[in-house]
Figure 1 (cartoon, one colour):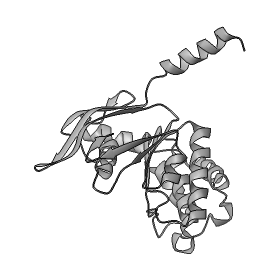
Figure 2 (cartoon, one colour; figure 1 turned 120 degrees about the vertical axis):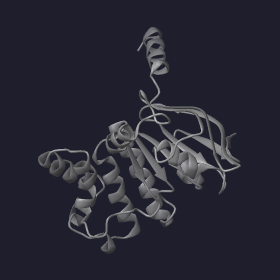
Figure 3 (cartoon, rainbow, N blue to C red; figure 1 turned 30 degrees about the horizontal axis):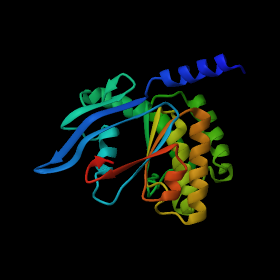
Figure 4 (cartoon, rainbow, N blue to C red; figure 1 turned 30 degrees about the vertical axis):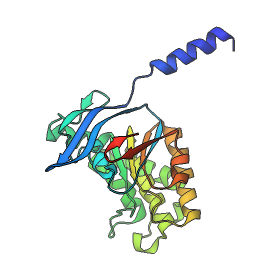
Length: 234
């Protein structure tokens, strides 16, 4: 590859549009200011960690990015949609098709099997049954739990439950995954396996990851880290 080709590739990479653009976001509850003029961006396929002490505003920011809550001011652009101004119908569509969330305590539905828990987001998104069946099989293989397809959540270990939760989050091929302390309830070995799996699968499918964590190891698995203190990025 000659120097001109390298330069062209660099320019193309720089010109890549942001998937998520957060600009001057503020949020208060009553008289307490929680987020103060927060701005950052995430590119497609990029993995970004958010760290900060308890009470710094991490959960509030996560709620804004998922469309559960709205900022008092500022914009949150996901592709061409401003989540701060979107209608309830538009937000529902975005959450069903473009955003997934992974939780610390898995949130698997207890009466559904592992395969059914993976499939449910695709059902909600209106995907046809043959597509759902094929993708469930692919994801079970990807997370190395094909033999657990018919297992109920209460028979799975913590690490296995989180891998099923990751498969569920990937099922409808979102543009952005929001992960809230995904290794917080796991032992160190399961935590490392979860982080490796998240990295591998988000890279493969070019899905952006926004990972909220207290763990330096989890943050190190991402491309870069943002630090939030007293509601402001530092």
